[in-house]
Image 1 (spheres, helix red, strand yellow):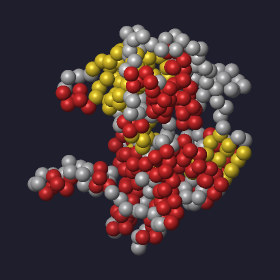
Image 2: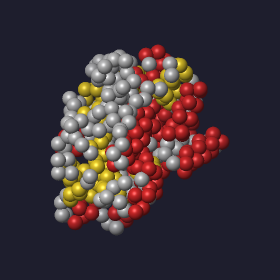
Image 3: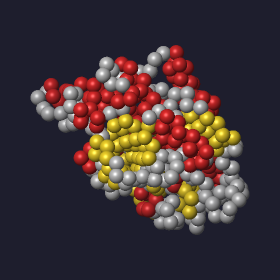
Image 4: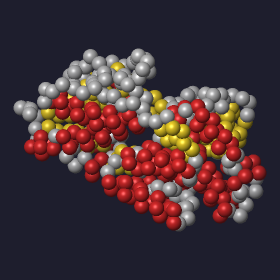
Length: 455
């Protein structure tokens, strides 16, 4: 197929990076084993996080290790490099990488050459210059943040249960979530469900003592499931005594007081920020074309415009939606498109290597599902609106079918089955965040951080 050794560099180990590598690994098995082709996957983590499961991991329905897929296990024919790409010079076919080894050696970044580039670094949290946000805000984009938030919520209940100061108690039991998209609504709903269940084991903390606040700058939440289902979600959340504030912004959270644009003030020890994402910074450090929002300008064949041998998909790419009726519309940067784009991207790379014509990516949006806690959910699929238990069941079935590898599917299904037979686990393992704190104290030193990990 090819006369010289070809190196395919995949930047990113998320949806697009993993699924593209899996597709290439399957289609090019013979060439990879013979050494004619080499696939290098650069990722800051040795695993891919299946983000739709983060809310359930935070609520204790799924073990954290089953939310992630180890890259080296599933990409056995690829070379996995744990590090980050800091710059890319596509004209010279070189990428600048920093790895754990370069940090230890102090030798600075290293360069790697490539023949084909798949740029899929994903996105990062979009923050605003809000006073106190950097000091007190909690993100919800990684498995570490999800489990840290779970520990934090349970610790706040412990604080409220043991203090005699009403101000500290009220602040500990007030939880503010900023952002009414999937991440914010599902995280709040699952954690409120978990905390309400956990309250039965506290002698002086009741569900009605806790205050949950959802802040959204737009006039509705969950726009992906449609306006009707968004209104139903607001009604359902308010029925659970969750304070949903639309067309409202967080203006400050300094001094542990959340100040909203409508004048409300909430003393709180928990501010969860899920108000959108932005393109990864490495995109700005390339010589490839970007659109006004900082995403790569791509064709419907998933190539980067005006750049040969450069490919992209997912959050980093602005890909025209060929199934849309209105001209100029782009594919939404969500998991539904990313998984399908990755498979098409892998096939097109193979076509390119073999001199075959490329395929056009097209997928008509099927709809969306969202979980609102145990046995509660909303869905808008193929024009049909579903709510309550059926929507929750659809949410689980859909994501179980999409999580990579049979191994992960079986483990998640087993955990769901066992959680239906036994009670929830409500223990906090906050000390895992600072495992050396107790030993440092025993050795005569001072713990570098709070040994319980509370913020």
